Structure formats: structure tokens, C-alpha cells
Length: 461
Ligand SMILES: *Cc1c(COP(=O)(O)O)cnc(C)c1O
Image 1 (tube, rainbow, N blue to C red):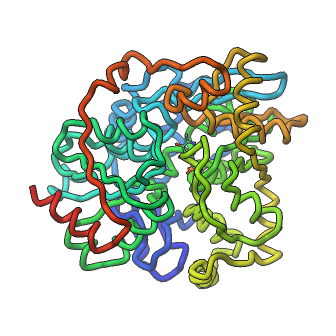
Image 2: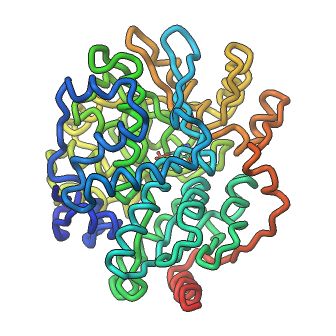
Image 3: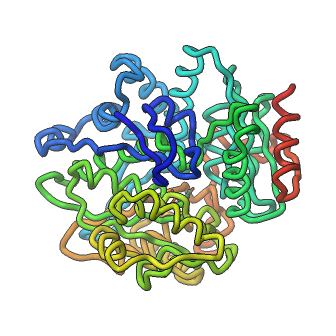
């Protein structure tokens, strides 16, 4: 299996290299050269299998010979054994034709654990073999950072530096990043928003001297391995509801477009997904882009679903690459136009996108009202991100079963949940002492040179 860049002028890589590299050297993102298609019989046979078995069968075709089969099974088992639910990704029913896929039973209570726990295992195995050491630098709107710290803390061959927007993550999210005691974990609060943090990480990757000097690796959803791990639960959930004999749709609370892009890959692998519905909060660039064909940033407004407070959705580039007929130079040109605030999507590309994706937006008031109403109608306590998904899904219900992704546990965002319901959700037992643990973090300006100096200093321990 080979991986190519969405901008068409970076080296073609194998799975292991693509995983360790993160961002391509031409600024693009790696995607598989061809997407493997499972037969309808293969898909039907996934129904009723344990999550780990589905994970093995769905991901195996992407790995080439990088891991042996037994080794890969071992890594998958290790990745998910720390989850606090036997089903890993259980589903509950909200209404006659509406289901909620709970992706928050991992160690840091958000769906990011599904990919990060597995990448932690895979990177550790790869680095142990090669004897190398890497520096992971990631940007987070809150959940990627906590999941990465949890997955990599204490590992011998890895330093992990996480940049998060100061004052714009929830207390639980921040504490999950600032309380690991291991010396290889470094939490950095920058003066800026998530888009600034993500831009500085991309700058570090594009500074080849720095990148090679510190042996930079990435775990943001620009990393293909992360998207791949998320493809699994689309198969797991859809086959539980009767796929491939019956089509389903998914609604996905979206920020960086990584999670929903995984659904797109599942669809290209042959899973009968009718529509993938993009659900955004008031930071609605993706909804506007799909409606009007104009992808244009107009500044991030902090919301009660902070993990989606994003205006530069990195993984949208991967969808554009396909929508533009895999023309890397066309994508490179669009991304160059981003520097002036946005670009126009061609009519042909827009129609291609609309064949797969629908979209909707949920205001702050609607988010709170959805949390209140869903509790009353179903007894399910939603986090604000999941509520954005549920609201937008309700606007898209039809004859096809709808599965909405619940991306985080309500206890991760207790303030919004309490405002909507009067109930302050408690942290699960394994995290009950989070607010008693001492915090350790560094404040830093939104400045590339200063951040690079900080990274160098931290890894020189
Ligand atoms: C990261 C995150 C999202 C957005 O996912 P993307 O892959 O960035 O689109 C939504 N909800 C929660 C809780 C998250 O942590």
C-alpha cells in the first residue's frame, strides 16, 4: 500500500513512513493511493464480531507488510483494553430511526482515544524496532492533546509537546493535559486560538531543518493512521444495524473534518452509507462551504462545544483532493488561496462533495435546548458536541437509519451540561481525583521561533 500527498509533489511513502511523517513535505496530507474495497460478504461477516476483530479486518489492507498479523492483533488488543466498556463503541437508541454511537468510553472520555491509543501502540512498536526517538508536537482544541498525553506518557522513545489555546479548553480537558507526571509530557498554553496552534505546528513541519533536527512526528488528524483507526467504528456500528443489507447514514460533529473523513473512507471501502452529515456549531465554515461553494474563514467565536471551534479544517483538503479528481496541483493552488482567507470550490467539485455529504449548523441556544430535551425524552445526557450532532441529525432524519456520533462524555464539559439540565455530571471513578492532581504547564506566545526554542529546550532534558 502506497501513500501519496494531496498536493502531489512529496515522496510516495509506505504505511509506517506515512504514520511517522505526519504532514507531507509539500505541505499536503497523505492519503492511500487506492482505497481497498471490501466485498459485501466481507462486510456482512463483521456483524457481531468483537470491536478488536472488526478493527483488524478493516485496517489490515492498509498496512502492507509493516506489522505482521499477530503483531498487529496484539497492538489492537493493547490499545482497547483500557476502555471502560466491553463493547468499546456501544450504541443506544434515541428515537425510532435515530441511534447514538457512544465513542467516549476510552481513558480520556472522547473519541480521540480510539485513534490515539492505537497510534501510541503502533509508534512504540515501530520505534522499538528502529531504535529511533521522536518528538511529537500536536495542536489541540482540547481532546486530541489529552488523548495524546494519555497514549504516550512514559514511553521511552517519545517526547510529546501539546499546544493548546490558553483559556479556551474546559477545565477537565486542561487538567488531563497538565497533570501527567511523566517527564516526557509537555503542555503548552499559547496565546491564540486553535487555528493559531495548528498553524504553528504546520510551520514546524514546513521548517525542514527543525523538523529533521528534532525528528518531528505528528498525531493530529493530519496523520493518516489516525483517520484509519476511526474508519473502524463506522463498520462496527453500520453492520450492527444491518449493513451491508441495509444502508445507514451518519451525522458527525465536525471541527477538523478528521472523524467524518474516516466515514468517507468507510463509504469508499464499500460500506453502504447514504449520507454523511457534517454538523457544525456556530463556527460553521464547513456548512457554509457546502451550501454556497465558498470556503472562507471569518474568525473563530468561542462556543460551548470548544473542540469544534475551528475554521481551518485540515482534513477537508483530503476530501477536496478526491473532489478535484486527485489533482494535487489544483489542491495546492486552493491552499495557497487560503492565505487570503478562502477559496471558491468549483461547481464540479461541489457536486461531487454534495453527493456524499450534507450539512447543518447548530447555534449555542439550540445546543443547550437539545441537551435539555434529549435528557427529558430519552434519559441520555449529551455533551455539547454530541448535542450539536443530535440537533443536526434530527433535521436530516428519513427512511434510512441515522447514527449520530457522540464524541465526548458529558463530564468533560460539565458547565454546559449543568446549564442545560441542572445536573453536574460526575467524572468516572478512574478520573475522580483529577481536580486534586498538581498541574504543570508553560505559557507561550503565538510565535514560531519562541515555540521552536521551547520544544528544543524541553527535549534536551
Ligand atoms: C475533536 C472533536 C470533535 C471534532 O472532530 P474532528 O475530527 O476534528 O472533526 C468533535 N467533538 C469532540 C468532543 C472532539 O474532541
